[in-house]
Length: 250
View (tube, rainbow, N blue to C red):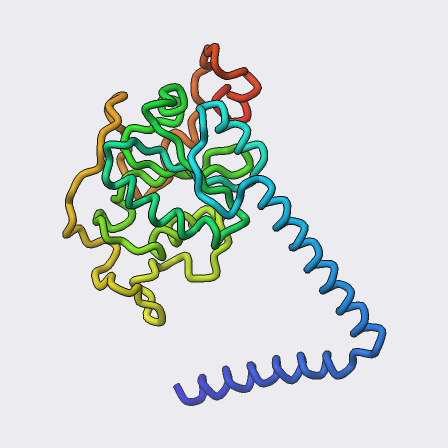
C-alpha cells in the first residue's frame, strides 16, 4: 500500500512539474495571446448573459397561455417548466425551490404552466401527476420529474436535491457530483435533510391530474415515451411545425 501511494505521489509530482515547466517556457507573446483569449471568452460569456436576460432568464414566472410554450422553447436552449394547479400544496413547494434556482442558473429558462388551462399540452406531454417538472433541451423533451418520488417522496426536500435532479440531463450547469445526491455526499450534507433521498417517511401522494392512468413504471429510468414516436395529432390550436419542434410527429 505504501509503495502504491508513493508511486501515485510521484506521478502527481511529475504532472505538476511538467505544468510548471510549460508555464516557465511561455514567452511574452504566448502570455499576451492567453490574455486575449481569456478576454474574448469573458466577452462571449457576457454577451450570452445579456441574451439570456432579454429572454427572461433569471426569473421564475408563469406563461400566460398554452401557445407561449412554443415561443419559450424556441428562444431558449434549456427550459424547465413546472406544470401545476392551484389546488396542489406540493406545487407551492416546487415554486419555492424554482424561485431560488432561476436567478442562480441564468443559462436556463424557468417557468410554469397551469395544467388545467393547457389540456392539449398536458395530454401530449403525458402530464398525469401534479406537480410535474418538464425538462426541455433544444425543443426536445429530455426528462420529467414526476411528483416527489425522485426527490425522496417527502415534502421537506432541499433546493440542492431538486437542483441535482434537474442537472441529470445537463439542463443546468452543475459543479457537483451528478452520480450521488447532495445529502449522500460525504463532503456536503444538505442542511436540515438528515435522511437519504430514497427514504420515504413522507408518503403523502401527489395529485392526479385525472386525464388517464399514469403509466410510469420506473421513476429512476428514462420514460418509455422518449424512445417511441407519438401518433400524429390534429389540432386547431397548434401548427404542424410547432408539433414537430416538440418531436410529437412521426
